[in-house]
Image (spheres, one colour):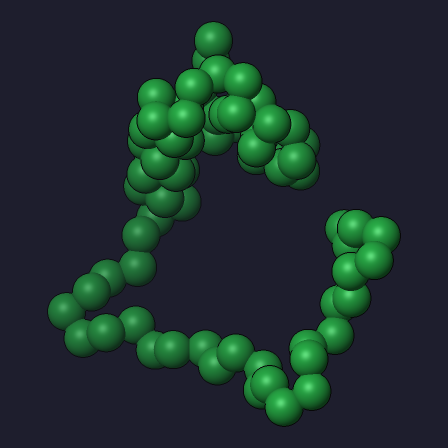
Length: 72
């Protein structure tokens, strides 16, 4: 979603971001592991910023993120 007054294009002189390879010795996470880690991040965020700010942030996420958000 692009908010009014915002542009999707890059400013002149900036290049597109490059995809970096996975460093040696690191492994890819399974979907279950990634979900568990994301839930931990959201739970920590909620503790750090409080319920009101947390709601403001999570209300902007697509509905698919609902499965990663900790309950009340």
